[in-house]
Amino acid sequence: MPGVSFIFAGKMREKYFEGAFAEYLKRIGGYTKCEVREIAEQRLGDRPSQREIDAALAREAQEIEKAIPKGAYVAALCVEGEMCSSEQLAQKFSALDGRGVGRICFIVGGSFGLNPDLKSRADWRLSMSRMTFPHHLARVMLAEQVYRAFTINAGTRYHK
Image (cartoon, rainbow, N blue to C red):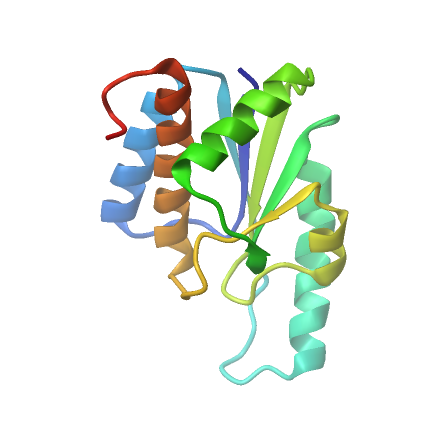
């Protein structure tokens, strides 16, 4: 199966999210090589203008682009992306493996999301829900779903 990379804007600070995320990374590691890269989230004031937000997202996008492994299949998490079931995610992994894709790279923006150009460049735009989640919780949820996809493909009892 392809390796997995996660690129996140910002650092996790909540111990309970860090612990849950670390647990799923450990579990994913039983199936494939997994790496995590965090880039600095641009700091903005309490009421940034749209121009300030756009500039910050452009700076983050430059750093994210540098962190994407060469040749990786890029999945950008964004609310306007495609929703899929756990089984469909597992099928996606299998299909990519069948095409010879060596690495899947998930990118998750900070509190203002991802730069539009970065989303357009992605191979796949994925949405976990139309709801909004704290991006640190979204990291945990994404890692759990990646782990679940591997267990589905392996035929283990984790997925019911």
